[in-house]
Image 1 (spheres, rainbow, N blue to C red):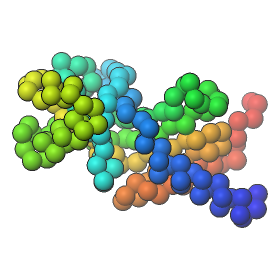
Image 2 (image 1 turned 180 degrees about the vertical axis):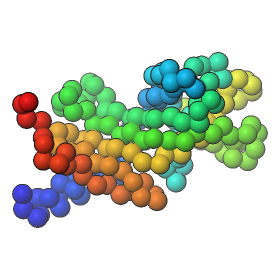
Image 3 (image 1 turned 90 degrees about the vertical axis):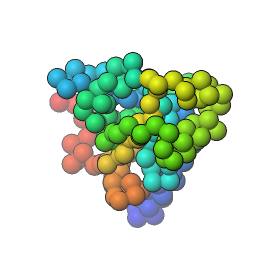
Image 4 (image 1 turned 90 degrees about the horizontal axis):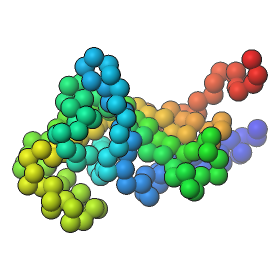
Length: 176
Protein backbone atom coordinates (compact mmCIF):
# COMPACT_ATOMS: atom_id res chain seq x y z
CA UNK A 1 0.00 0.00 0.00
CA UNK A 2 1.32 3.43 -0.84
CA UNK A 3 1.92 5.99 1.82
CA UNK A 4 -1.00 8.16 0.63
CA UNK A 5 -3.46 5.22 0.76
CA UNK A 6 -2.30 4.39 4.27
CA UNK A 7 -2.65 8.04 5.32
CA UNK A 8 -6.07 8.29 3.68
CA UNK A 9 -7.28 5.10 5.41
CA UNK A 10 -6.09 6.39 8.79
CA UNK A 11 -7.63 9.84 8.23
CA UNK A 12 -10.95 8.16 7.39
CA UNK A 13 -10.71 6.06 10.58
CA UNK A 14 -9.90 9.16 12.66
CA UNK A 15 -12.81 11.07 11.12
CA UNK A 16 -15.23 8.17 11.65
CA UNK A 17 -14.04 7.79 15.26
CA UNK A 18 -14.63 11.49 15.96
CA UNK A 19 -18.33 11.21 15.02
CA UNK A 20 -19.12 7.55 15.73
CA UNK A 21 -21.15 8.18 18.89
CA UNK A 22 -23.16 11.06 17.38
CA UNK A 23 -26.12 8.90 16.34
CA UNK A 24 -25.96 6.44 19.22
CA UNK A 25 -28.08 6.85 22.35
CA UNK A 26 -27.29 3.71 24.35
CA UNK A 27 -24.31 1.62 25.38
CA UNK A 28 -24.11 -2.14 25.78
CA UNK A 29 -22.82 -2.89 29.28
CA UNK A 30 -20.76 -5.90 30.29
CA UNK A 31 -20.46 -6.32 34.05
CA UNK A 32 -19.54 -9.09 36.46
CA UNK A 33 -20.39 -9.60 40.09
CA UNK A 34 -17.68 -10.12 42.71
CA UNK A 35 -17.62 -13.87 42.00
CA UNK A 36 -17.18 -13.32 38.25
CA UNK A 37 -20.75 -14.09 37.11
CA UNK A 38 -21.22 -12.06 33.89
CA UNK A 39 -24.19 -9.93 32.93
CA UNK A 40 -24.94 -8.25 29.59
CA UNK A 41 -27.30 -5.29 29.45
CA UNK A 42 -27.62 -1.79 28.05
CA UNK A 43 -28.36 1.75 29.17
CA UNK A 44 -28.96 5.12 27.52
CA UNK A 45 -26.03 7.48 28.10
CA UNK A 46 -24.71 11.00 27.93
CA UNK A 47 -21.05 11.96 27.63
CA UNK A 48 -18.97 14.91 28.77
CA UNK A 49 -16.15 16.77 27.04
CA UNK A 50 -13.52 14.52 28.68
CA UNK A 51 -15.07 11.41 27.04
CA UNK A 52 -16.59 10.11 30.26
CA UNK A 53 -19.94 8.36 29.93
CA UNK A 54 -22.84 8.60 32.34
CA UNK A 55 -25.69 6.12 32.69
CA UNK A 56 -28.88 6.73 34.68
CA UNK A 57 -29.84 3.30 35.97
CA UNK A 58 -32.01 1.61 38.57
CA UNK A 59 -30.42 0.29 41.74
CA UNK A 60 -32.68 -2.76 41.36
CA UNK A 61 -30.91 -3.92 38.17
CA UNK A 62 -28.19 -6.57 38.06
CA UNK A 63 -25.74 -4.32 36.22
CA UNK A 64 -26.05 -1.61 38.89
CA UNK A 65 -25.37 -4.12 41.67
CA UNK A 66 -22.38 -5.49 39.74
CA UNK A 67 -20.95 -2.02 39.15
CA UNK A 68 -21.32 -1.22 42.87
CA UNK A 69 -19.49 -4.44 43.79
CA UNK A 70 -16.58 -4.19 41.34
CA UNK A 71 -16.33 -0.58 40.14
CA UNK A 72 -15.72 -1.91 36.62
CA UNK A 73 -17.69 -2.09 33.40
CA UNK A 74 -16.95 -2.65 29.74
CA UNK A 75 -19.10 -0.61 27.35
CA UNK A 76 -19.78 -0.96 23.64
CA UNK A 77 -21.54 1.21 21.10
CA UNK A 78 -22.32 -0.70 17.92
CA UNK A 79 -23.58 0.12 14.46
CA UNK A 80 -27.25 -0.71 13.87
CA UNK A 81 -27.81 -4.09 12.21
CA UNK A 82 -30.33 -2.51 9.83
CA UNK A 83 -27.76 -0.11 8.39
CA UNK A 84 -24.54 -2.14 8.42
CA UNK A 85 -23.02 -3.19 5.13
CA UNK A 86 -21.54 -6.37 6.61
CA UNK A 87 -23.04 -8.13 9.65
CA UNK A 88 -19.68 -9.81 10.43
CA UNK A 89 -17.89 -6.47 10.58
CA UNK A 90 -20.30 -4.04 12.24
CA UNK A 91 -18.71 -0.79 13.29
CA UNK A 92 -18.20 -0.72 17.04
CA UNK A 93 -16.44 1.18 19.78
CA UNK A 94 -15.70 -0.41 23.15
CA UNK A 95 -14.00 0.85 26.29
CA UNK A 96 -12.86 -0.60 29.59
CA UNK A 97 -14.12 1.75 32.30
CA UNK A 98 -13.88 2.40 35.99
CA UNK A 99 -17.27 3.26 37.46
CA UNK A 100 -18.43 5.39 40.36
CA UNK A 101 -21.85 6.58 41.49
CA UNK A 102 -22.37 10.33 41.59
CA UNK A 103 -23.60 11.67 44.90
CA UNK A 104 -27.24 12.74 44.50
CA UNK A 105 -28.22 16.38 44.30
CA UNK A 106 -24.68 17.71 44.07
CA UNK A 107 -23.78 20.27 41.41
CA UNK A 108 -22.26 17.53 39.23
CA UNK A 109 -25.30 15.24 39.66
CA UNK A 110 -27.69 18.07 38.76
CA UNK A 111 -25.66 19.04 35.67
CA UNK A 112 -25.59 15.45 34.39
CA UNK A 113 -29.29 14.93 35.18
CA UNK A 114 -29.97 18.08 33.14
CA UNK A 115 -27.98 16.60 30.23
CA UNK A 116 -30.13 13.46 30.43
CA UNK A 117 -33.28 15.61 30.42
CA UNK A 118 -32.08 17.57 27.40
CA UNK A 119 -31.25 14.38 25.50
CA UNK A 120 -34.09 12.06 26.54
CA UNK A 121 -36.91 14.37 27.59
CA UNK A 122 -39.65 14.10 30.19
CA UNK A 123 -38.91 10.50 31.25
CA UNK A 124 -36.03 11.97 33.29
CA UNK A 125 -38.58 13.98 35.32
CA UNK A 126 -39.99 10.61 36.40
CA UNK A 127 -36.54 9.23 37.37
CA UNK A 128 -35.17 12.28 39.21
CA UNK A 129 -37.14 11.89 42.47
CA UNK A 130 -36.88 8.07 42.55
CA UNK A 131 -34.27 7.10 45.15
CA UNK A 132 -33.36 3.81 43.43
CA UNK A 133 -32.22 5.55 40.22
CA UNK A 134 -28.54 6.43 40.18
CA UNK A 135 -26.20 8.27 37.86
CA UNK A 136 -23.01 6.31 37.33
CA UNK A 137 -19.90 7.90 35.86
CA UNK A 138 -17.98 5.56 33.55
CA UNK A 139 -14.39 6.70 33.05
CA UNK A 140 -12.75 4.97 30.05
CA UNK A 141 -9.10 3.97 30.26
CA UNK A 142 -8.54 2.26 26.87
CA UNK A 143 -10.63 1.01 24.02
CA UNK A 144 -10.99 -0.62 20.62
CA UNK A 145 -12.58 0.90 17.51
CA UNK A 146 -13.53 -1.41 14.64
CA UNK A 147 -14.88 -0.11 11.34
CA UNK A 148 -14.50 -3.19 9.15
CA UNK A 149 -12.34 -6.16 8.23
CA UNK A 150 -8.68 -5.28 8.81
CA UNK A 151 -9.74 -1.94 10.25
CA UNK A 152 -9.40 -2.32 14.01
CA UNK A 153 -7.73 0.35 16.12
CA UNK A 154 -6.67 0.47 19.74
CA UNK A 155 -7.81 3.70 21.40
CA UNK A 156 -5.50 5.24 23.98
CA UNK A 157 -3.87 8.47 25.08
CA UNK A 158 -4.70 10.94 27.80
CA UNK A 159 -7.67 12.24 25.80
CA UNK A 160 -8.58 8.83 24.29
CA UNK A 161 -7.97 10.36 20.90
CA UNK A 162 -5.02 8.22 19.76
CA UNK A 163 -5.80 5.44 17.29
CA UNK A 164 -3.22 2.72 16.62
CA UNK A 165 -4.08 0.12 13.98
CA UNK A 166 -4.20 -3.46 15.22
CA UNK A 167 -2.15 -5.50 12.78
CA UNK A 168 -2.55 -9.11 13.98
CA UNK A 169 1.20 -9.58 13.58
CA UNK A 170 0.81 -10.81 10.01
CA UNK A 171 -1.26 -13.88 10.92
CA UNK A 172 -4.47 -12.66 9.28
CA UNK A 173 -7.61 -14.73 8.93
CA UNK A 174 -6.15 -17.51 6.79
CA UNK A 175 -7.11 -21.19 7.03
CA UNK A 176 -5.54 -23.25 9.76
